[in-house]
Every structure is written in structure tokens, then in C-alpha cells.
Length: 173
Image 1 (cartoon, helix red, strand yellow):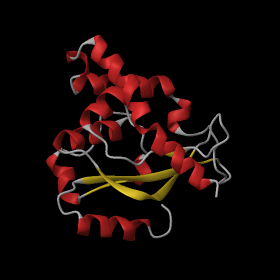
Image 2: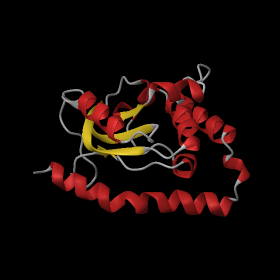
Image 3: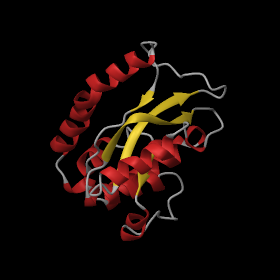
Image 4: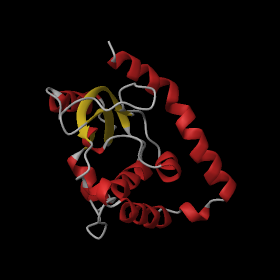
């Protein structure tokens, strides 16, 4: 977490009593703490925007778990994390939250995500993908037409691309 993140989260939930969970911005860093760059040389960031159930189901998690927060009571309402899932328990949990209500947004950098070869995700991409497929099935992905699934998977990156690029450029200052 970045300095002041928890204070900002507390302020957000105090001033947004109807929000159950919220997504903030995230910086990707390498094993030495340096900013990870994308193919354009811009800082790689976790998108912090209002996340809906459909977006999560059809596009996946394009926000950072370390910069995502929820009210304590909602954890029990959605039965918490599924302990049977090895890697994507957070994805399943966020789908359950989003089914109740889309996320709120805290438009500030709250955390960093360290990318390195030793991470569970990097070492086990195939198992991670299998978990994601199980979760999508559990939440009704297969019940939608192939056309709808393809259209939504293509649309969501375009929807958030401009604001994402703006935050990347601001990070260069």
C-alpha cells in the first residue's frame, strides 16, 4: 500500500455510505521497485474505474486487487473467498460483490503490484486460467451467446482506454 492509502479508503467509505466496495489506481513495479513500462514505454497501471458484473465476467479483472477495498460486512454477505480456488479466489469474490453492486472508484494511486518471475501467477498461468474458466462458468458465462461474449470482450478495453492513457501520461510528469 502507498502512504496514506488506508486513510483515503476510510474517507471514501465515510463519504459514500452506499458503496460496498471500491477500486483505486495501482502502479506496476518490478522486483527492484521501478515502474514497469508497457510496449509504448508508458508506466503500466492498474485501471481504477467503476467495475460492473458484466465487465468482470466478460473481460476479467483489469484492476488491481491490492488497490481494491470492501466493507467488512459485505464479506460475509457474499460468503467470502472460495478456499477451493487456488489462484483466482479474488476474481470470484469480486464477481460476487459486483453482482450486488458495481464498485465505487477512488481516483488515486493506493497500491503497487510487484511483477516478478517468482510470483504464483507468473509461475502457474495455466492453473490460473483453469480457475478463471471455472469461475466464469459458475457465474453464468456460458449462458450468453458467443457473439455477445466476443463483443463485450472487445468493447471493454476501448471503453476504458482513453482514461487509462491519460493516467499513464500523468505518471510521466
